[in-house]
Image (cartoon, rainbow, N blue to C red; front, side, top):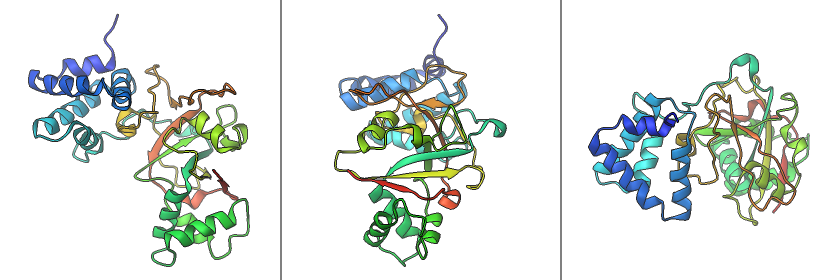
Length: 273
């Protein structure tokens, strides 16, 4: 049986670095959350051997410098040196990119983004109230400019699309309730009290940032990410949350550099907890 991408990367490490990595991941294996992150690293198939080796070497170097394993892993994933480790999954060719993308984001999080985009004209609470007020509305006079200037993500944008019709709103085929949306997209970090905002945008109108297949470096310590096992797949797939009584299927997922909502399709939708 051929070696996995993870095994090939481990084989490239020097003995001391290998020892540091294996010791940290062994400690993680006894923790439910970190154990899943470790399993995700082991299962990752989208990174090239060189990129995977670089990520693990950087992780080992942080561990050797005395950083905690979590901080070491986050630093390795976020490194912006000559070999940054994010956005290393394969790029979807322009001719195959979906036209319409979408994501579910926490309302509080996006209110912060809108407030920042307003450059002091709105507080977070004011932005939140306006998002609630204008949900499902096309009349955004006085607010639309702030909404379109707000980033769609934080450093990275995770997005989904409709595999059967990449020109369609991907949320039209998903449940319209918070629990169903979270289940289908594997959004396990939201609590039942969290309100979501559904953002859908035109890829070209948003500047056509490159769309990448996600990797464990993009996911960092997010335990609900699951690496897609097919090394040659052009995008990732979500892992629907259990118990998934409606049998919702995995949804395609991509990551891209942060961009604003200039290509946002209106109306947006707030989904109350």
